[in-house]
Amino acid sequence: MPSIEVKDAAPELIEDIIYVCSWKKLDDRVHLQGLALKRKWLADMIEKYGSIAKVAYLDGVPVASIMYYPEYADPCSIAKREGYCYISCIYNNGDDSQRRGIGTKLVKKLLAEMRKKHRWFEGRRCRCIVADAFDTFEHYPMTRFYGEMGFKKYAKEKGVFGTAMYFELAGKYEPPAKDDEFIPSKSDVGKAVLFFSPSCQYSFPFALKAAKMVGDVVPGYPIELINRWEKPQEYLRRGRSWLVVNGRPVRSFFNDRERFKAEVAAAASLVP
Image (cartoon, rainbow, N blue to C red; front, side, top):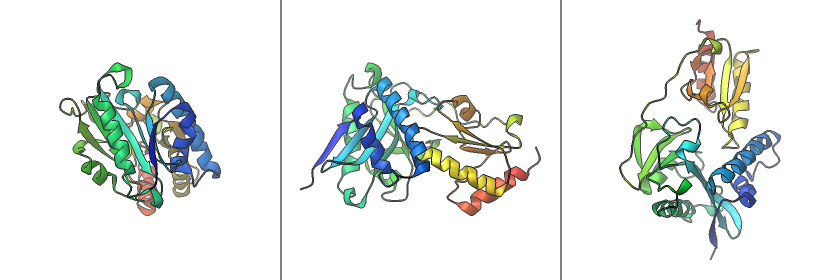
C-alpha cells in the first residue's frame, strides 16, 4: 500500500514545496525566474511566521502542498481580519497522486491544527479560514473541493486568483469591511502596468507572457512590471487589478487570447 506522509514546512523543505508545482519546468529559463522569487518569499515567510505550508509525500516523493498564512501577512489584503488564516493555494501535481485523499488530508490537518488553542500565529487562536479557490483546470474544481470540505462562499469577497470561500472555526464569518476600489490615475495613461506575486512561481512568467501579448496588440507601448508584495499601495489603488492599460483595468486573462487582445486594444485606444 502506498505510503502518504505530511510534513510542516521548514527551511530545509523549501525545494520540496517548489518541486510540487514545478517538477516539469525545472529547466525552463523563464520559469526559473519565478522560482527564484518564490524561494526568497518562502524563506522570508517561514522565518517570520513559522510553518506556512504543509507538504504531502507519496512513497517519499513530494506530490502535494497547501500554503497558508495570517491574513494580515499579505500587504495587499483589504481585510486583515484578526485571527483569520488565508489559504493561498493547494495543489496535487499528478495523475498517480490523484483520488487518494491527499488534498483532503492536507486540509483536515490544517483545520485540526487551527482548532487547537495557541496553534495560531503569535499565540492567537484561529477564528476563520478563508481559501482562494482558483482552478488550474487540470484536476478537481477547487470550489467543489472546498465545498465538500464544508467551506462556504461569500459572493462579495474574491480571492487573488479565484473565488473566496470560508470555514468558520470560532465565531461567525466577517465580510471584508470594504470592497476593492479602483482609483484612476493620470500616471497610468499611455502605458500598461502589470502586477505579479512572488508567492506563486507562475505569476512572474505569466506577467511576462501577458506583457508580450500587450506588446503584440500595441507595439512599442510602455509596460511596467510591479511586484505587488513590494509595492502594495500601487496594487491596492488600482483595485487589486492584475493589469491596467491606459488607466483602465483589464479583466480578461491572457489565456483567453482573443478576448484579452480585444480588451487591451479597446483600453489602449480610448482617449483619457
